[in-house]
Length: 224
Image (cartoon, rainbow, N blue to C red; front, side, top):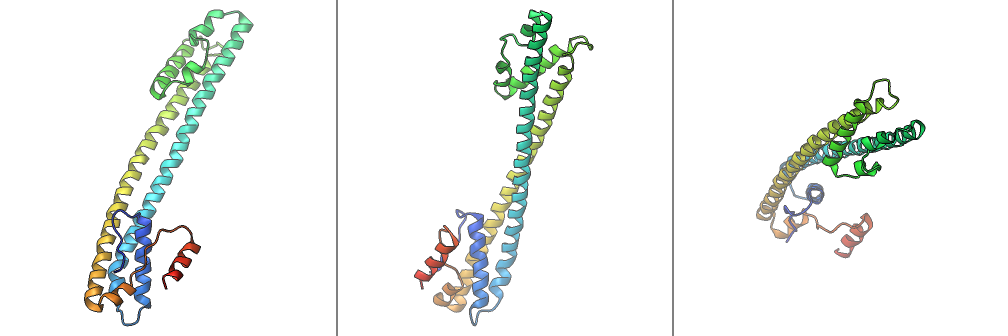
């Protein structure tokens, strides 16, 4: 009996089997094109949904990379704040200033926090620098920190939106795969009824565990 595709298989494997079934149906003498015309729309539908998912997934991953960059930007600005504030203290003897911005006297207590506490700590730090006189050489860090946090928040929101889009696209892939699986089975039952089991089996491929193209060829040759 021919092997059937099923919902537990990957979309790629189902698509591969479907395209091979189409090809075998056109290569087998005495088989009309009814099998290709019924399975092809399901094949094309699944292809389209898979392309949509791949693009959605790519968009999500690219945006995630932007989130990571924004997070690194925050870390770099915090480090600059710490180093320049420490230099200012050394040059001007204002020992209290560094402790005002970094009570532990370590920038790591800000950048190594978990995500939400970190953002809260950076916002607090920005507020402290904003309280300086606008002419103060460290005043600009308030704006830089707040801008970095805002950019991070925008990127993170966009990433979450794209993640949802990718999730919905995957659901569409699964639906299209189910449609193909049902039509594949219907084609086989129809072929078996019209052609008999042996000839029906001939237009449905052997479904293998793909390792490489060479393994596929060798496996098929061994089954001849």
